[in-house]
Length: 501
Image 1 (cartoon, rainbow, N blue to C red):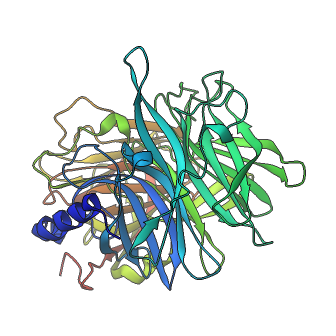
Image 2: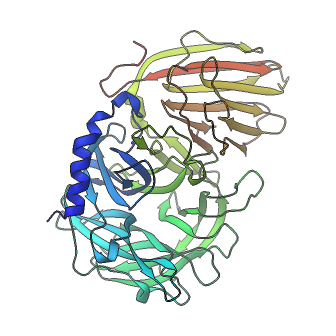
Image 3: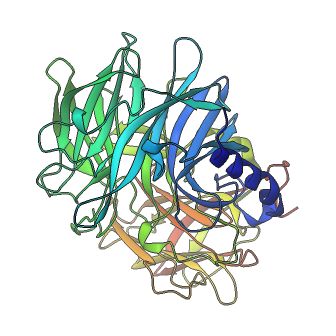
């Protein structure tokens, strides 16, 4: 039965979302139907379609009482909006339906496991959010919350666990048919920990073990955890709050963390082997993965940063977008990320150039705000150049610049000149593998975002931009000389047309 709050959200979507022209939003990155979007939820493959839910406040472009927005796609690129899936309409979630995940049940129905928030007032008058885990079951369109909710609460926490930071369950089905989920929590030391729970039916749960803990080394609360096998290893993905800078690997504030290691299911012991950032750019948070029907591990994330949410024009009717889904693998002990291969289905006109670059130059046919471009750099006769600069989304007053200095192996992305009038985070740097000046960059533009993949996915840097769409130039510049090879594809719109016909 559809509640009054849920129906109100659906009616609002139906009435006002059609007024947003498709050209005013990303073409193949999912943005909200209308209003505010943050974390991806319930990323899943169900009934022949990819489903992606998201944290959602339909009534404004600011964070508000959390609903679950919903979209489906055959290829994770062309999305169809579905009616709002969840609204905060029960006593246990009246403070919001927070992040969670999805799994298909043996009877063919889909179960959503999410964090319900209930606001309570302490004896001293301070209001705090009590967080519990709740379930809703449905058919891919409509979902019914169960009477047994919440299915995990304060009584299910290990000693020292906090009911005020107990959220973002990621569920999966084991090979034996049972279920497991990992949930973020903040223990007594004030940092983050990842709790593993098990269930026979995805409804009745019991605590199993602590997968890993922060010990105040990598930020505080570990949000939006994920835990999965990959290429013979086990991987933890999480988004820590309040991180401290660590060289060029981790930046201050809300970050991303990948831990690669070994896991023994019988003992419940996870052994760390490598730690790294997931994304080194400005806008990337709250990852979630699935195993696709063909066996790929695919990751999506909110392409935004909590410290930069004041960037866009507030006349805009939507805010927030998802990163391009990425295929994950492990190579040389590192997490490797590359755009899903389905992106090639959107390839339109191809332009190719090769030549020497020194002073700033443009190349015929290389421009646009919807493109997939690979730029390969090679030093000339062992003479390593000093600095290479790539400007994209370039107009008379605007551009975003990617800079690489081979002598320090530092790669930088800088959107200071992208049109923002606010003093926010506009620059990030990372240390790339030194190859004597050789570098391969793959640049994906989709109107209001730039995603940069380095050396076939060894690193990724993502940033949103709200530069006027008329700023579509691209230029190349080098201090010294470098041989470049550029391969650029226009990306087709939903109607199968290029923006530059």
